[in-house]
Image (cartoon, rainbow, N blue to C red; front, side):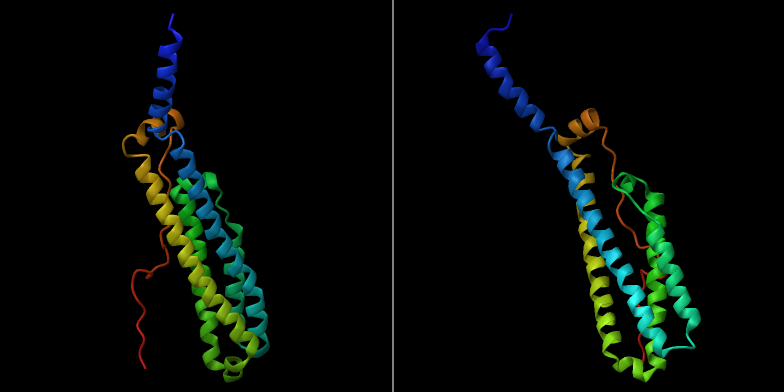
Amino acid sequence: MIDRRRLALLAPLAAISLSACGVNAIPTGQENVKAKWAQVENQYQRRADLIPNLVATVKGYAKHEQSTLEGVTQARARATSINVSADDLQDPAKLQQYSQAQGQLSAALGRLLSVQENYPDLKADQNFLALQSQLEGTENRIAVARNDYNQAVQQYNTMIRTFPDVIGAKIIYGAKPMTPYHATTPGAETAPKVSF
């Protein structure tokens, strides 16, 4: 039978050894990744909410651009129909599908915003300018949110692969790496050329 003194010494040692193997760090890292992903989704939702207003504003001026407007509406519908839950963050195929739909929406928005060149009155319309500014701000927020998510994924994936956290990650949680966000839009890795 273990006497009380030994038990009093062993309990803190057991607690220290468990805390050193990621028992608390692993779920904290997982929750951080999930929170960062929620922010990515939040920013994409903000963009999706702005699009109907932009389309309605442009429709008033650009009667002949029906195919562009329909393309934006269809791309928005596809992008908002694909959902990625926190449980899907370990599924690269699901994240790629989500990324592709968002990339198609970005391309459709680019075509819509280029319509303003053909309609001088649209360039000066305050509603259009306000919505364009909101979309530009949203695109920047999306980029920041994706970057924050990728940093959280990197930290988590590093944590579950390094000692001593790898012990708790494998034995206690069966932790698997999370999937970072990748740009899947063709040509996204190449800077656009601007010529005057």
